[in-house]
View 1 (cartoon, rainbow, N blue to C red):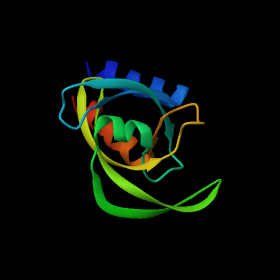
View 2: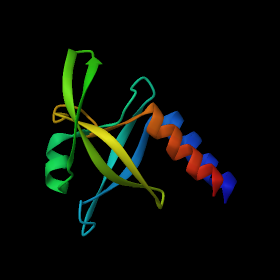
View 3: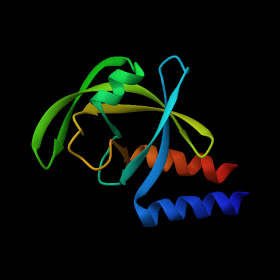
View 4: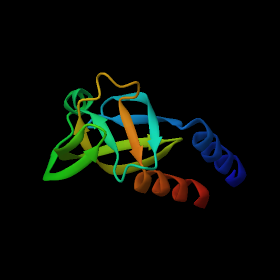
Length: 121
């Protein structure tokens, strides 16, 4: 089991994309999206339309984000995700990702946390 999970993580790293299941705020429904792994990003980011549809709550905090478009301030949201049957809580920024190929980016810290949990099983 442990080697199979490691192999999945290696595949994600090679492909740069992993399926992420997002649970609604009340846990009554879910949607699975492909998320881009971005080890250059400190934090995960999710499309604001998905955030609203899933009913995620703003944490009350904002952070400064520097990206290819310059600097902007983004709200933070508590996001419930599931990766290969393992539930995780992440704090993600909300962004307009409508023109992007992937509605979610998994940042370095969250990706390392996901890998750590999978390797322990």
